[in-house]
Image 1: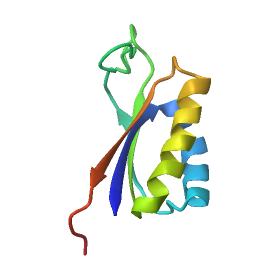
Image 2 (image 1 turned 180 degrees about the horizontal axis):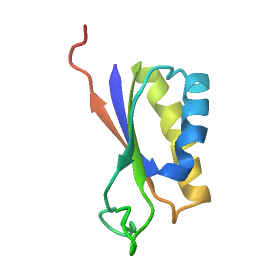
Image 3 (image 1 turned 180 degrees about the vertical axis):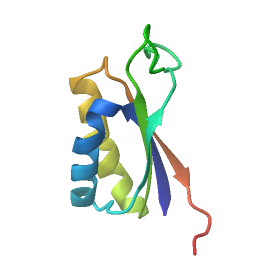
Length: 97
C-alpha cells in the first residue's frame, strides 16, 4: 500500500475528488484550506490580499499497482495548467488498522 499526498490549487478540488474513484482511489482525507508555496516556481497560496488564492491538500491510500494511474492523472492536470500548482508525493504505508 502507498499513501499519495496531493497539494493543489483549490480550483482542482472537484475534478480530483470526482476522478480518484475511477482510478481505484475511493477513500481520501482532504484539507480544503491550506497555505503554502512551491519550492521552485510555485506562487504563494496564502489567502491574503496580496496572494488571494488558497490551496487544498488530500491524502489517499492505494494499492501499489494504482499509484502510476493516479500520478499520471495528476501530472496531466499539472501540465495543462502549470500556473495553478499541483504536487503529489508517494509514501510507503507500513501498517494500517
